[in-house]
Image (tube, rainbow, N blue to C red; front, side, top):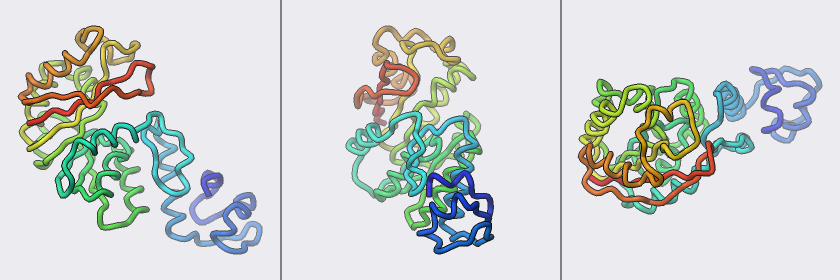
Length: 256
């Protein structure tokens, strides 16, 4: 099915697509107008939304869409995060959830999860994936950016994920603003923040000039940054690759 999604428009299916999905829909005549099954329509809609994004950043764990190559591997980080967390039930907020990979994995394991992203197109994809999955553990998603005047819209939680977000906040709002924002976010968490950010030792990106010099090994700087926002114990869960360079990033667990 994944090979013909781009050729399906609403309820019309081309002759080229007929053979590929004939086993799913039964015998069709060339040029016939049919009503596609609900699951197929939902998958087609999700595919169209994904193709409208600048990139597919996370893996898409949906039948028929797994062929879409993500910009970044996420499985390694979710394994590290899950090993550090207590078993459910716990409440988790995923801030900067992108298209929801981490959110869906944790919800599937029994955590009460909600996802937040500043990009409405990302949230549309998250909701489309949720509609396909259609189960009682499906998370909720909200088009909310992480700002000082919006933190109160994020519920109190045991855990929070904030991955690859704060280098953008520093770039657009400055270091002082980002520290105050981290401090407010800390007040919403009862256990641990899982944190990752772009580092000054990476090759130049548009946000790089806004970051302070973190030194050759950014771990000390990141730990001090989180401690300055009130986190008590800041631990490294390891170094993980990213899609922008061969320089890995630290994944941090910041305890309350």
